[in-house]
Image (cartoon, rainbow, N blue to C red; front, side, top):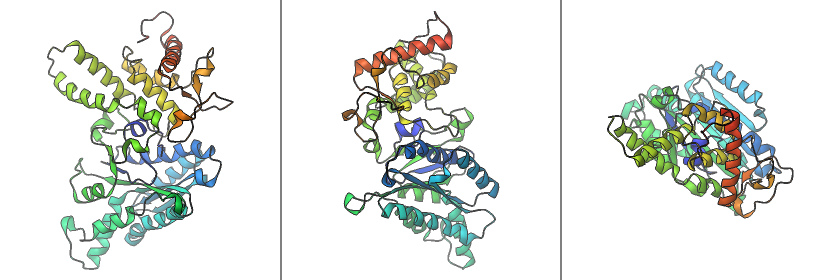
Length: 392
């Protein structure tokens, strides 16, 4: 399942039927990640030829302000995403029993698609407020409180909800229900009761951090703490080939960057690692509500991982990124191919016949030639003719 976010699709891939937790403090872009995922399905659903290829989205708003829900409806309406989306809202002004029941209502709608051979995505935003509503009901009913005054069966509350997300076998229709629960933490404390419960239930988590958000890294995803237990099994093989080493390089960069702050002399290899890591950190940045198609993500990540951006100023990376996908060698159009939605597209790639969706050929030599041609053309446009910023 493609989210349209480079940081997620390349480093924390999500498969259909998976339960991937989005966790972080308030105002760190958790809802934006979920909304980007819904918006990204627009182009995929427009290419669908049957109901079984369409991904329907169910968004459950729990305990949010009515104005926030209205703003969300407007965003989805402007992007024409309401035609495949369902919104279930139990706002902050609604009684606690409604906030408690809203996720189950949304899940029942998602299960309809799953059980009828279709695919659905459900977003619970957020389960922390559902747990608070359940605590309120339990205390009023005089049930004995436990840790943090939550009732003893609050783990069962979330497990029976999230375990309904699954991918069915081919014999039972091959439908799926993917869940993206959202949990809000306090001051980054993931060891609190509700966060640890949901982390243990789900198949991985996407961690957003306040520090990264204020440093301008948005989406503010900490790729070191974020993990997908399904991993590359749910990833396009071409994406796995392109970004295979990027997570390791980012981990090495974070380790070396902490030592480099002390100002000690660094050798050439360490300087090169810091230089590459700074650009790999810059690449996942994306504007809000602007998901990127998977074929354009691969072009951008390939350029960064293979050193095309190493000698480019950091403040020009985003402009370079926007330029790459919109360019293709005019003299050699056969170098770019349409991408198929199958998990092994390299076996089915062929010349383009009027298809507007392109991906570079998997032949390393040809791919590098095409990227060099694009790179030279775009650096001339960005910097002007005759600059030494080619980075090749």
